[in-house]
Image (cartoon, rainbow, N blue to C red; front, side, top):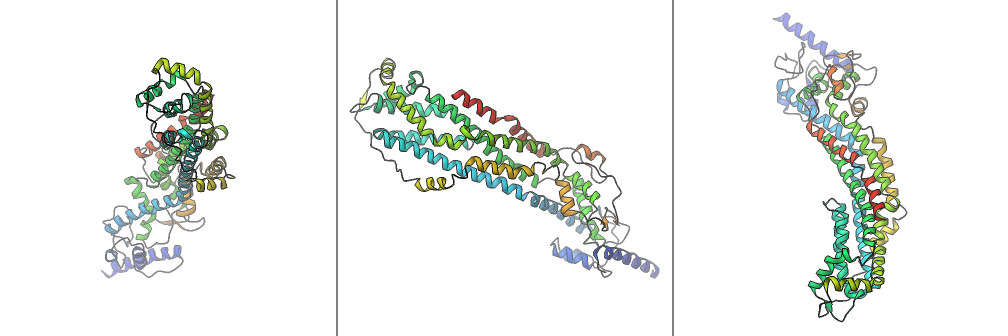
Length: 483
């Protein structure tokens, strides 16, 4: 019995000396260092951690012929901690990228909202200044139009052609009543409805509505696609930050990160090659995202280019009032011809007592916003988009190189130091190191990888949709059609 105890003591000392070689200190022949780390990390009750190494016959992953400081319960706690550690490292590595995209998504949306308010302000001011008698009636339709612009821009399923036409349809009875055929009384609601329904046949505003449809489509479509693409970018990062690890991967992470603790090696780190095999295996799905992520950033660059010049949302929205002015001039010029067509379709005007109030629009309402926007005019939206794309470009290969970055900068031991190979402290890792991606994992000696996670496949499909939708090209075609 005494000989058996002596043998056990020699083994324990050997294990702890090995720990000392890697940690630069000579630990006592006990599990004290393991207990301290276990308590510091708040992995579970300290009472469950042995005070001295013992046989680990009940261990599933951290098996060893040597006495161990681990129990089955500790192994379970370590497995949870190993997954949480990697998720934390993933989230930290993507934090700057996520902030870059989410901050710009919020900034662009806020700027678009300001532009819509200013464009509505300009258009209502036009009526107050030049067509005061119908300004109050027109303001309702102007407000409805810019509400539609905002709904479309921020994702509602509608068409620019539909709401631009609706604006000119509802504007026509007001213009007819005050500009083309003004009277001492207002036209009836029924007569106004007839005018509204006949506007597209009568064409009182000439080619202006068609031009407005082209400009709005050419500007709003890529702007909406740009905002949606930014939201997708945040969604991709949130999904990959919370990657679901397989049972095989979880066990491999445990073996790499916490099994050395069982032998008292609380400061040891995995060998680089060993780390690469495990992390490339666990992140094989993310490596599949890489090609599509690169295409996504390229698509954002193209969208940014499509939003410049005559396609820029600031140019189109802030000049919409000029189109409305041209439409009203056209209606005045076409007045006699329009009246003749109206009489044929709707008959002579049916009038009611006049109720049209004067201009009630508060022109000072958005003055502060206008000043802020003017102050920011040196840094136009186009410049801000270019700056955003420039900062995003270095993240093109983010997913392709993620596993290598994590091992090299966070997880693996530095060159020349003793490192953990999954079973012992060694000078170097001797197994084959596989490449990134699902296919390469068939030869992985550390992790079995079965196939792509359905959640990651769904994210890849969404990235493909952004890449293949080509809204920039559609926007150009829409603009050309409008002119």
